[in-house]
Image (cartoon, rainbow, N blue to C red):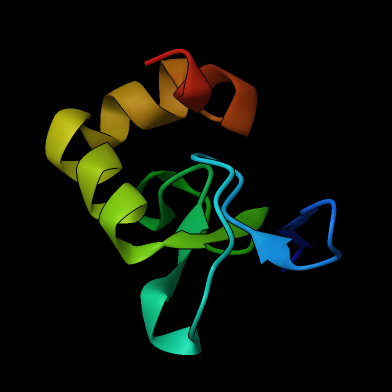
Length: 78
């Protein structure tokens, strides 16, 4: 399984969705760019803030994620 991460100007890991530093490890969850239930179990993942991750899944269905929002760039357009 591959994982993407973004670094801030201060070399601090940041959420790829909102761009803010992660802070503590408790604030981080792993998002599968293609949902596991739609064939993404071994696909690319990204670490992001828990709140950003919850917002994605509250806003979009797994089908929409697989078909239209399977990259960070596409998710950022929401």
